[in-house]
Length: 428
Image 1 (cartoon, helix red, strand yellow):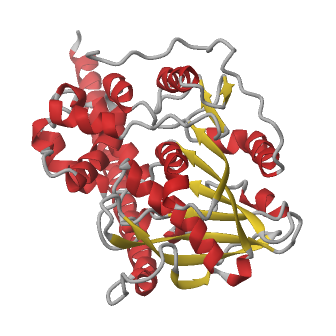
Image 2: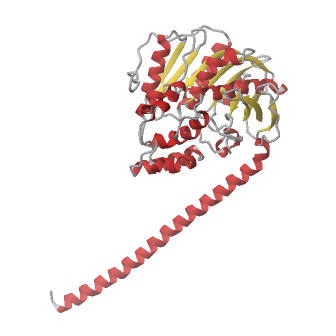
Image 3: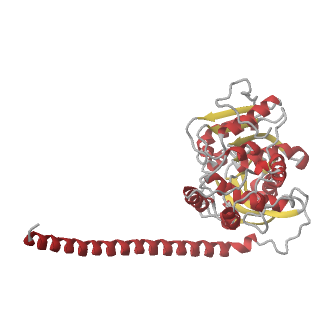
């Protein structure tokens, strides 16, 4: 290379280097700016959430409330600011009961029609929600859009039905939510119907149906199994379980990765609280044990985002499958959903694309229930995700519940082939 060309090349290289440095400084500055915006936005959002939750806290404070009195009795209520063409809503705090018989309190919502299209007293639909996170700020009655995930509620109000929506005791109220502890959640669901009956404006009758999704599907099945003994004054017309966490041994045997980081922390907070012989250290990794309580206290969206990040780095939550531990397996079996008797109409809905409650585990529950003679109708969808399932099937669910309220005969599907091979129980 000639000296002239070498000097020219040197000048060009120096110019490119200076330009690259300016670009690098600019890019670094932009990255820092984006990080700063993200941090500020997060802090502002957290402040707004904390400010709202602090303002709501007096309603949810149970200090000084008497444990004496009927189950389901409303001890506090106030209007809930939601826009519903066919009714109004009340935020409620009511007396309920844990599975061991001890008295506690649950918050929730009661939706009241502005018509008598179903006559009076009105029938009731008890909604049991799915996993939302265990922090008080995650309770459905405390969030900014309390009907965002139950957009079908106004259609029920239009028919003249009262709708209840428990938060579950310990979620939004003091104490620990006994997540996937069937007897406890069933009491909260059944006592929410009693709470509606305790509000004179609701004009709620004794006939009710229960609908639960995911975690709430398990709750709904336990509620139906307990209804006659626990709440004999109520008349259960039918039960809907959509994507129910019904076969927990099979489900724990197959799930992994991201789902473990979302569901696992809540189980580890809840079950040792209800069963003293369980120890979270027995089944978690070091990373899982260090973080499970903080994750459980998050709401579902940030918990899922964090789970995706951890999974992308190859972090595992469980050190061993919970069902491989004798103590944990025993509790997992105990919290699997009960089979309903032939006198109890049941609709089970699931999607073949469900990545949370795996469809083969729902098929296993349907198979088991049908073999036991349950009055079961199944509804299978091909291409709906877990979260979207309940809203997607709402028209069919409402029609099915309407038939139950009208005492029409069911159309069981146990004679039809399952669209997917049922799961197997690991270790059996």
